[in-house]
Image (cartoon, rainbow, N blue to C red; front, side, top):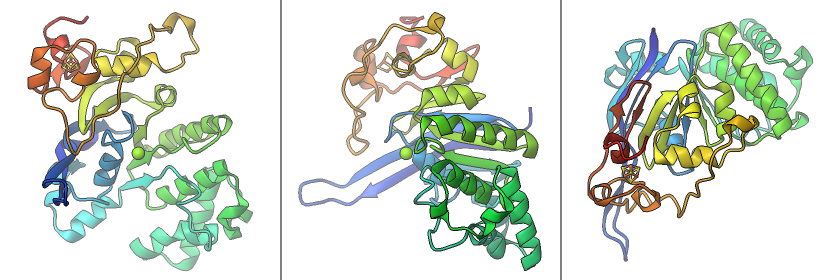
Length: 324
Ligand code: SF4
Ligand code: MG
């Protein structure tokens, strides 16, 4: 399989200066994340808020520069390229944000919003830009007359269609979607997800789909990476992850997700406590305070991802055969 994006050991560490009551500290928002995204596929990145998934989205789209690691797009490391070459590649990776209300400028007409990326990044004429914007409106299920309207005249679902259209104006290969449907009514979510899947087929797009909602992820993903405190704890095909979750954290997340199919009902595992602060991360496995399989080793050492037949899992209990 051809991979369009390959991410190797990406880190984003922030230095936090000492305050009156606190010493200097390093926040490891992303701490060595690696994955491959295949052409035309969807990788979902899941975890609680604070796990690093939004930082990952900002790093992948170069809104923030990673502290370490490689971002290889079509085999070239974006971070090691010169400014102009990097800029050209960056256009191929676009982001769609969660909030369709906040991300569209209320003072600009839809046509202007859609054409903005072309004004900045292409040498198209005004007429060509308009033609492209109208074609994109049609692709996302909106009408030509919407071109001259303002964002407040649209419903939440329509606004997210506009945001998707804007994200596609530069013909990206990869779209990073950060919780693209979580601000929408449940009844509208499926429509927007189906639109995204249709566009994926039609335009050969690859998606990084950031979400905390596992029922949405099950619907749309090909592969899933589960993150906890800046690290991947499990990485598997969507089918495998939902049929046979292996990491205790994944098991707990899945057990609290409502399932329609009663044959898939799970024992409810209560996730005790909260995500630890990345300012003061626990020693050993970051999940140990909440894990029912934790032992002495888990309090001292950090597990790393180990490949199994159908997945990669970072857990000592799994490595030692203490959990099946
Ligand atoms: Fe639990 Fe230990 Fe596995 Fe961490 S390494 S998830 S604490 S069993
Ligand atoms: Mg977030």
